[in-house]
Length: 418
Image 1: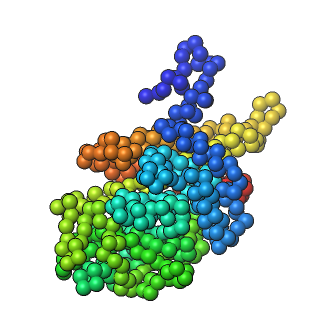
Image 2: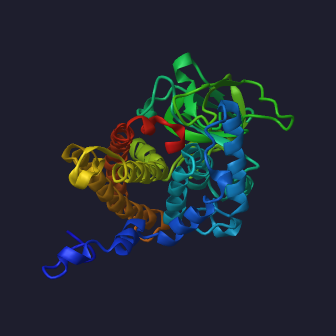
């Protein structure tokens, strides 16, 4: 349905055109105030990507930027009020998405720290875990990695190879990487900065595998050195996002206390007895993963806004760059060519649609995570939207940014044009 703000009338169509301010307001969505707040923050050049930096310098710059986010109270929105948060999940995602305009590395690394690592402790842990670790996660004194994906298993999380075997004699879990393909891979904060990790592993107690659960695992001691049994590798230079220290982690019989199990949905008593408020192992697994959907929500929004940014650059270029003879002795602007319009305008329309769809997605997410509409049906709807919109928006971003780049000719491949 076309909004009244952009629907022309018979009398006004030739002169009025589009109400740009109104359309812009609609694109800003439900959390427009937070988006404006974030955009104002990243006007500071300290947040901008510096393409003159090498990998190592870029990583350190992004870490510094994360500390600036903390200083500006830009990371607290989703966390409990007792720790200085706002318990506003929709605003949290909206604010993080905007960081992509400053530096995509900054957006992703902040999402790893506070959305994935911090989100796992918040959503899968209990009050004891919150009090112990959330303050340090929020103020970045505990930078951490979110270790789910393995070399041998990506989307098939239920089949990960890492094990967490309970030892009742010491009341500890033994975290182990039994073979190379079970090494945790593509982990932000893992190569350099992370001092702890939330590790997804097969929970085994009394000889029974109860499926994948999440554990808080320290990586470094107070001396700054990796703890015994921690294997850490650097993924090195990548094709992009080099401000993130992606790396691999493996565990050689690393012991952690029984209480480091994030036990909201499954617990182990001192004698090794397993209990869970959810009887079905399958439903328990999907419930645990469903609490971490915010990563897919933020990627959907950030990808859509990245597409919008690329199109803004390409369309601005196309309305100013001229070539070949045109009317009145002037060369023709690129956007007057039908082929150029067909390259960019359908992708612009799709980007509009995705941004509007994302706001609906974000409203659903906020309703579920705030508890206002937290029903099994709403959670299923949220998972369905996540499964549909994240791949669509990321595929669209890849296609759109490449087309926008090519539509700017050689200028599209210059760093100064992003």
